[in-house]
Image 1: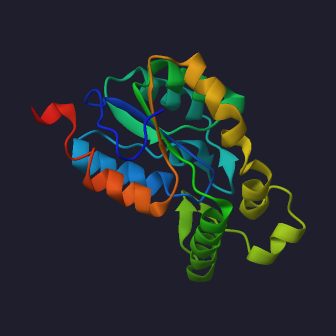
Image 2: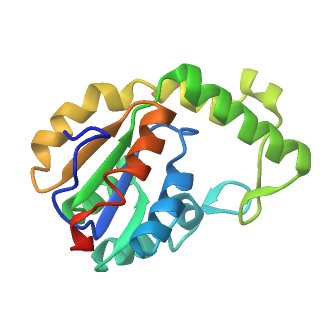
Length: 191
């Protein structure tokens, strides 16, 4: 697994960004899309329909995305089989392995700001009131708490399962910034 200082062995074409909710997957996806001139697709936007229901076209759209030649997206929806399909096609995976002390406050800020402003997270999806985390077992705060350690447990096996993928682990916001300023800028496609 590469770190924030390691050069990229190839110009990425199909990029997955892994990590728990709130670590900055979408933000990094948009930034890499600009840097590498690759299309970014927010997988949650494909998935969520009004009232936090699954859009009926989600699976078909996700499979179409996976089959295309170039993309950046999040590595999610394992229970729906999408994560595996994306991994089979990906050539690069960036794991935002940020500690909970960073991830959870970011998630609180994002969720609280959207809730206060009434901004939609996705088409017809508004954030639930923060205090409903005490009663709603599907609240995003509870999801983060339940799933935060999952990638740490699973990622070593994923590296073995998908040897065709270049894995990059970024552990702090500083590593993300340094990686974006260093190895990403000097990718092999510049030659």
